[in-house]
Amino acid sequence: MNASGTAPELRRFTRFLVSGATSTGVHVGITVTLVTTLATSPVTANCVAFLCATACSYLLNTLWSFSSRLRNRTLGRFAGVSLLGLGLTMGISWTAQTLGASYWAGLAWVVLIVPVFTYLAHRAWTYRD
Image (cartoon, rainbow, N blue to C red; front, side):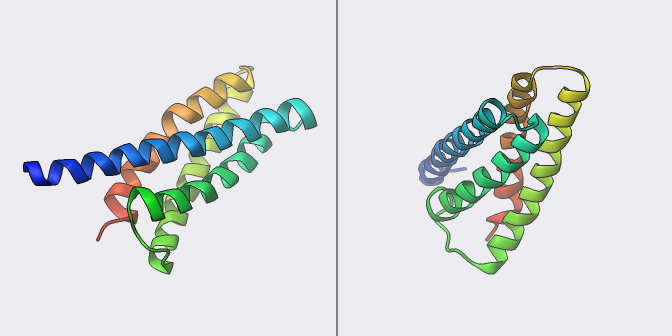
């Protein structure tokens, strides 16, 4: 990549990180609140949190990180990647629960694995021109 292409890519990546941190904060906040306040199971709490964080992520990433427009094609692709991410989130959370780990352990693995997967998929497919 030449020097003129480096700055926009770095800006996009930085914006994705900020969007991801915001969406992750939404996910963690909702999960913790549901588990500790409403005694929701960690699997259910992570599912609800993932859906809310995904809505936040779609808007932030489409409009800001990737400077794209809200379009049916992008929404469909984003939804597809998100469904794969939801499956991954549920699988991680279920595995942690089945192994008797605290919900914090499952949540930590969700936070470490799912954003990396979704960034790579969105960069390569969702926002492909």
